[in-house]
Image (cartoon, rainbow, N blue to C red; front, side, top):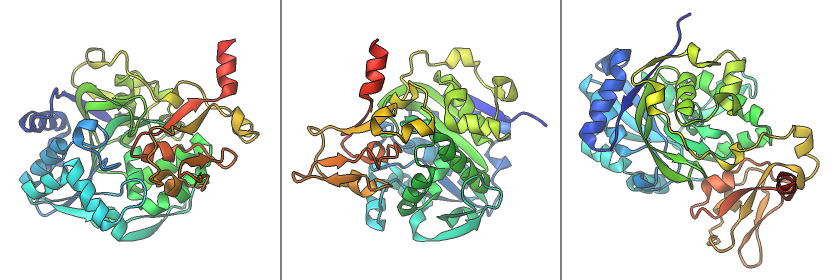
Length: 383
């Protein structure tokens, strides 16, 4: 069995011509876009559109990459459509506003491609071989197109340590249904990783092209810091792409739940030798001082320990009352309903019910939720 191929292309800026040429360079070893798209095909382009943030915040896939991919798809005679299901509750109106803020509306207008609201039409898919659910409710659109091209963003993530090509597929789950899947996984990172990989088995894209021109480090996936990386990565394998991207920024794939489980399930590489890398040598593009997500700094405690008392878990969400503007997004987006508004409107977290999914941190528009070490952990570290 041949190794999956991951290609790397240098891309120092989001200048549209520069990005277009870099995408062509990344796809050339794979046969170019014409290998994947033929005349008359309908092609879904799925970026990471986590929330309504402008491109310079590095929260979402940059519109310059989306435009380049749409242009190449149309050049092959394909019909392109852009879509996603962002985190939290969305309406058609709020989704259109998000498209404008992220710059995707401009891409749609300039190229004449279509757009789709994932939550508008869903389908239940049976998954008899899945490790988690035996059926999944997901957006219908990936089953109605000929090709799916994922455009993940290289970012850190409070729950999974890293978010990329595999995690991007969680966007096929309608926004209102995401909470149910988080509740199923609870505090077990391996279970959530298996859930993501089960979705990957059902919804594996034809091609993935990662936006790593400017990634995100620290408090990802929304409130970290933009970090210049200067690369585009492409592959037909989501797991191989994530393995190489994580390696580029100095994250150990063996410590990232999704990649560790992929290797254990035989669905992803377990070492660099199991990936064919085309492009500049890794040593020439590595980021030496990339800041990981706070929860990636320490190993996860066994599940029986995390169930004993909220004080015994290695990390917990904490709301900063000065930054919080009492909008209630965290209250409505908490899967176990562990957050409630106090008399003054300031949210309070019931740690006994908290499952440490960190959706509150991910969804908070003000970055008012921090993930911190517990007093027990801090005391141990100080001894």
